[in-house]
Image (cartoon, rainbow, N blue to C red):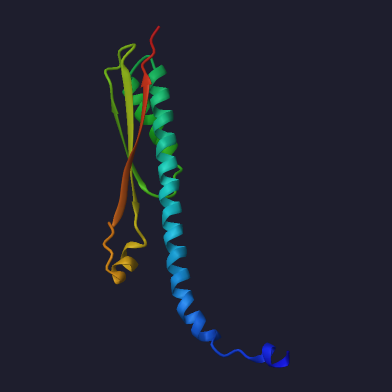
Length: 134
């Protein structure tokens, strides 16, 4: 029993092999969490902008863009761009698209393993609402 408690040969070797792998996995998970957070922010902003623009009686496109940008003002990560399409006439569809870009922190490390990854992740969240009118 005494030898079992004091025999520590190979611990440093194990740590040297396992620690870099764990750090890479941790960095990749953090990067994907940031991407998911930006996707949720963009989706919420697109929904809010489309809803507010669909009930606006004057300048619905401007109201939609302002509302979406208001939601995105507090977003700590990513860059966002809001576009709106629709005629603004009652019964027509209003479309709000929020495009977002998040930096890829894992990309530089992945190149050491021969994997090519983009410098930034980009995607778009879209929301549709029918323009109301009364």
